[in-house]
Length: 158
Image (cartoon, rainbow, N blue to C red):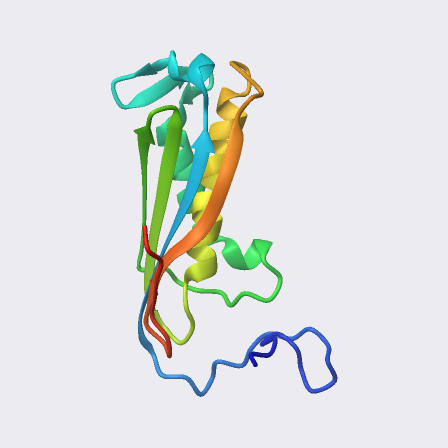
């Protein structure tokens, strides 16, 4: 049975000591799905939604990237990581916005949280920028799709 990794011998919260781990290439891909609905999608032109605040998807990509780089400021026991890459894409499927955040680094610990935070903040940014059109927006899911490097690889069936 797996145990919690962020507890010390006294059962108190603690950062995991990664000092003895080997540096490897680490990647993670996370996805968030935002149900926008027809009231918002009627504003979709070309590859983005225009609002008075600016282009929604472009702004969400920037916000998600900024958040991924600051994950250790948001999640208390995360390690500070210098990311080698963070790529966020946003596509539509019907009235859903599908956000993918791919993050990589060379390090001793994985980047799953950075990918999840990047996708989540991009989704929240879409919500914030589109709420003037409708509050029927639903951030349906945020999940890890894939991770490589370290002890275990993970791949979720699409």
